[in-house]
Image (cartoon, rainbow, N blue to C red):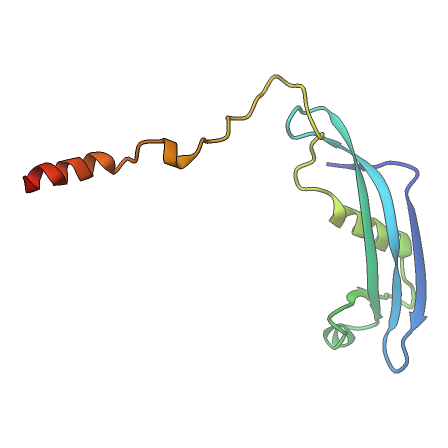
Amino acid sequence: MATLLPGGWATVRGFKEPYGPRVVSGELQCEAGMICQRCLQAVTVTLKGSIRWGLVFSEREMQSLDQRLDPVLVEEGQLFLRQALEDEMVLLLPIMPMHDSCDNGWTPDPEPGDVSEKTSPFAVLAALKNEQRS
């Protein structure tokens, strides 16, 4: 669960490509309050993204839209911009929000050492095989 914090911003521009779709493009940024999945304390994550939408007025137009554009359906002649931007922010949320470092007493397992330093588990089999030959 996330809470979008005040102070976010978005810049959007709209234009019509010659002989093409109506396009809305822009940048957006905000902060969201979430729960760190390491220490279970509050964490603030910064969400940054860009949009490039193709405005469509029917399902048929959606299927023929340029693949570089994300389709946004215009209903009853209106684009609900705030809702569309909030939806984009939700897509930017991290799956596992975490602090850069948490002091929760947990330490990860040490990195495994060089494999060549360890005895091969097959060394015993090789020794048995050599014994059988002799």
